[in-house]
Image 1 (tube, rainbow, N blue to C red):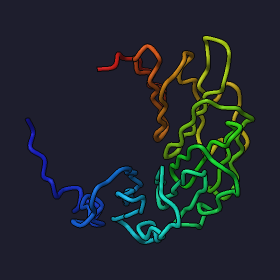
Image 2: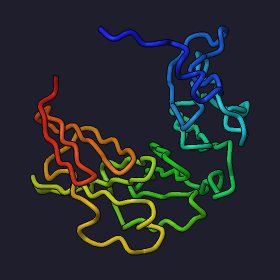
Image 3: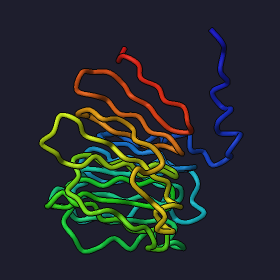
Length: 220
């Protein structure tokens, strides 16, 4: 195989994001941002490392155990078992302005974070509070660097997962259909990236779409 220099990634960014602290301990959850990484360690505390230019690697001492951690470009957020959210890092686009709601799950990408509430609607913050989200309820959602994907609840066998760019959601120009329809089948997992997204279907096939390049391939 092709040899890989293990220090190359550290040199390219020079933020030590590829170098976890030696005393990190047992990790239960992990999330990677643009140039920083955060992990929940045994006991529920958060440890972060890498770029700290916006305080994104200075995780707070939270009064509760963490059940999920997610990272955007220059910020991260954590979720408690009771649905509380705490965010830290950059706040120039209101990335830390999480609403006072109870969340089941959260996901961050770019300067945006979204959460699924108790009634399965989606509430978002960051990106200067200018992102408009359609009415739910939604079964799945995922926030990528510049893409947001949503799968609505439906009794039908055909369910359309729509994806749109953050910029279109900011401008209110998001239409139906959105930038692309990721899939029209029942999904079990959904992940958005930068202009593209992939979903794992109930038949264990993988569907990917975006940048005008549809792809459907079987799960390995």
